[in-house]
Image (tube, rainbow, N blue to C red; front, side, top):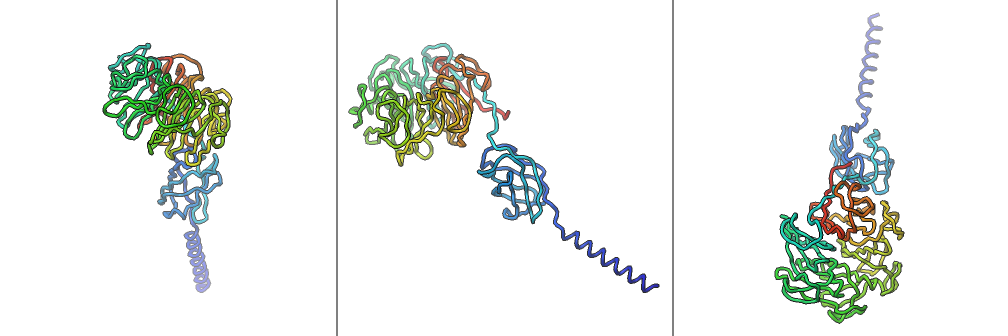
Length: 441
């Protein structure tokens, strides 16, 4: 009897020990407690908090709606993961040592943000300098930021170029206020309908002097104005004043010292090399629409220019209602946004719509700011190609407020400062407006 009891006890002990070892050998599932953010475009870095993750990045298999994602950082309680480019909205899963757990849904798409539209400077049309409240403009047309954070304004109706400092003081950089074509010192120089301005790495300012069919330069430091290209109206390549433009509207520069000109009435984009040689890189004097390589490319009243980080030229092709790109190294022109129909539709790339895009600029993050003239709207195109409206409700007027509760009257240009604040030339309201990105909606 005693032997039998000892046998049963031994067997029970062995079974208990074996079960304990078996339980210890079974790995536990990872736990996903939260993800942040829960929405964003491809390549968004998503932080996953939880426990029982592998401390080796390769030891975690993370998927977004079934698509593998790259793990960039791993601890036992936190993972940082890049949303895959080919992923889609759906649940996140984490697998460690063959054990998988399901987490919250990650939604692909840009995070909706409120944009607050306000008046920065100006009121009724006039010509005055001083504080932001005292200053007056008449048909402010073009904007650019210099390296010191000064906002340069082409005050078209006053035939002057003005400057707004970061402290809010408005002054005249050049232009006597009398229409003309005089070079010289800042206070005696004359412009005739200066439309838009560009700036180089040394803070020299370039002016599309529309009424004089010339490209003018305002030297940094001295304010002395000179003519660097053009004379009378025409369409001719050449050096300096031997070249001809017809109603140039916009200017952009690159880091190599090249100047690009939107030659509006010639339906062309021109290039001024550091040597002064003017050439045509797109368009041939005839309005139309076609991508490709010059001389087969056609534009229709190109009205805005910007140069991106690669040195390529972005064109607001006004009458074609499209945004085009000139790849400078190859000369190839492509359409990157806009259906071609005169409409204002938010969407991605070629599915978006514009209504005479007139001004364009690009910030350090690769966002494009587009002044959509006849829709009276301000548009933002993100690097993903998504186009959204950040100001204006589609009707002409004047009203500060949120992105859909504000009104503009023929906005012609927009530029952002290093803090992401966007400034707008509100032409027919004679004001400089400001758009401040707010909180997520």
